[in-house]
Length: 67
Image (cartoon, rainbow, N blue to C red; front, top):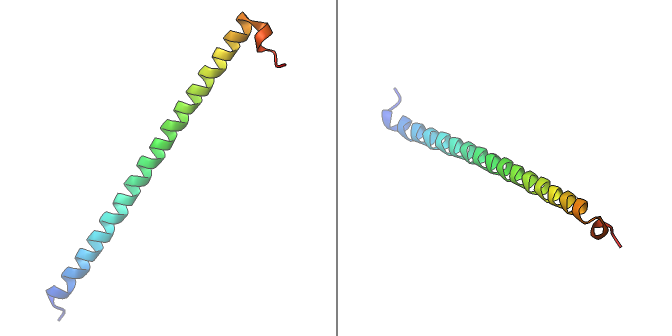
């Protein structure tokens, strides 16, 4: 008959491994969300910069031409 004291360390070890795995998955999701948010922010920045350049080119076309 197996003793209860032999099972307890195994159960604890499995619980700790499960918690570590769940924590790492949560960390990955957070990292992915952060990356997506930064990518969206960069896209908005680039679009705004292009709009400013287009407005500037319309108001002063001589300056927008490369020399």
